[in-house]
Amino acid sequence: MKIFAFFAAILATAFSLQAAATPLETFCPHFSTNMPIIWQATTNQLLKSFWIYKRLPPRPFSSTVISNAVVLASLQSKRFPKPSINDFSLWEDKGPNYPGPIPVYFIISPKSATISYGLPHPGTNTMDIPADKILIQRAWADAAKLGVNPAQVAFKEMTSRFNHDESYNDLTNQLCGRGVFLSRKLDGILFWSNGTEDDDIGGFWIEFGSHGQIRAFSLVWLDLKRSELQSVASPQQIIACIRVFKTMSLPNGNETNYFERLKSLAKAKKLTITKIMPCYDGEGVYGETPPNDEPSPTIAPFAKLEAIADFGNSNVVVQLLSPIISSDVNRLLKAK
Image (cartoon, rainbow, N blue to C red; front, top):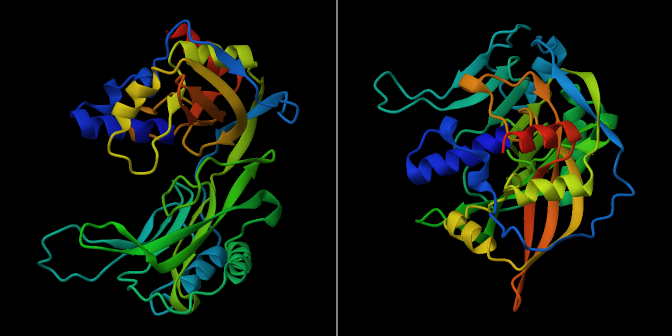
């Protein structure tokens, strides 16, 4: 899945190891075997079973969706591509002797079910960014232009873009863009992402800048079909996964001491699970990385857990990723 691949990239960067050789346990807190784990999360609203989905072969975007995407990107002066299963991209004009890679600012990729755009050189203007209410209304309208059924998405989050200082740190007093993320829903369950221009969002994300100019947008809409219904994992099964180091800890943003924090987290004297939230991820199955960067044929749910780690004299709120269907729990426990 994309999340696991992301963690693998962290490790590969830190230790120069190949992601394919990275075990799941590397990203999981190694709690003491006798540490109490208390389940206080409410499960009354949790489904009793979840659908696993199969990814269907790619198909072209419609001519209407393509033309509307071109208009949203203000690229009417370029040619309108015809529906096809082949990728279509527009690159910045950097001249014949440009020394680096040529940036892509518009792409239609039926193979990844993605249409995305990023305004080249969007500038740093912070003036007259419309109110959030207006931006959300525009996001819903623009999503519909790209064929998104309003009943199949839900507003999830606003994102912010700031100008940077010389060290590329955010200047939080210089807001230059506001994004709206409409997450896709499968059986009422949202996708994991909080909304970025990344290709794994599962839904529609759009960012506006000064005077409401569209700075970027991304539509990711896999063609999926229900495959099989799987029973939900019990709290005891999820706790068993925690004990054998099968629940990943999320990084806090772009933290640089991730692995140090992971080691310190393992010193907790007690862990209390306070919340469980099912999610889907557009890249596959929890704890599995598709070989050779091939798209996973299967899309399965997982869980985001919120917990309190008690160190005796202090508490820390922790977020963990966990399997949520019994078949995934059984697979991971057998792999131990």
